[in-house]
Image (cartoon, rainbow, N blue to C red):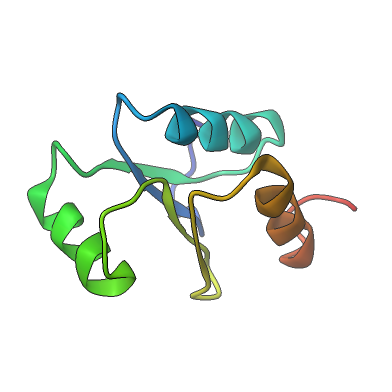
Length: 89
């Protein structure tokens, strides 16, 4: 994970989830800071995901502007990062 004191992106996931690893690899590869929360290690985080997303599918990515993505493809995630001007187009 890219370390930052106050990242504007939070990725909720699990250690066994291949989609979580893939989305984190996109963020790492683009050098985008994010906070990672393992919803199995933090039950209150799983409750938050369920409350805000209606389910616990992961990765559940919350961006600084309040928008979210659930299980995005690499292309969808990169497009969102471009839209937020976090990476060049």
